[in-house]
Length: 198
Image (cartoon, helix red, strand yellow):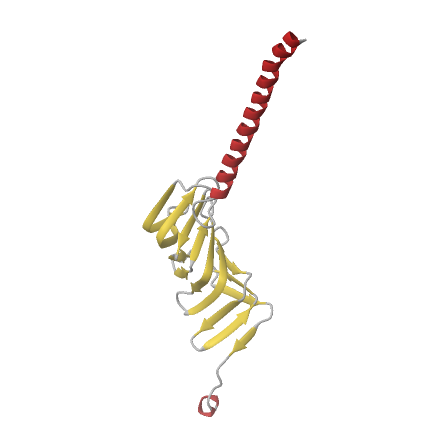
C-alpha cells in the first residue's frame, strides 16, 4: 500500500503543477488583452493607428479631367489606413464649382472619405458664396463632390449683409448657385426707413 501511495504522489503533483501553470497563463493572456483594449486609438476619434500625418498641409483634389474641385489647408492632417479616412484640424479651404468659382469653407475639424468625394466639416462650420456674399453657419456641414451638393441637418443660419434667416435644414447646389433653407424657418429683415419706403 505504501509503495502505491508513493508512486501516485508525483503524478498528482505534476497534474496540480500543470493546472497551476494553465491558470497563470490564462490570467496573463486575459490581462494582456485587457491592456490592448484599454489602449484604444491613438487620436481622439480615429480608428486605429495612423500611417502618416502632415503638419501645415495644403491639399488640392482634381477630377478626371484635371480640374481642381477642392482645396484644403490645415495645420494637421492625419490618415488612418484601417478606414482610409483623412482627418483635419481647423481646415480652411474652397469648394470649386464648374465655373471655377471658389466657395470658402472653414470649421473646427474635417473628415474626408476614401475617394475624397465626401467632406464633412464639424464644429462652427461655415460656407461662403463667392459673389453674392451670403454665408451659412452651422454645426455640421456635408459636401458631396459628385452632386456638387452641400447640406446640413443641424440648425443653420444664413446671412447676407444685415439680413439673417435660420432653419433646421440647409441645402446648396454650388454648380447651380442655388440654395434652400427649410423646416422651422425664421428670419430677421431690418426695417426700412420711411424715406427708403417712399
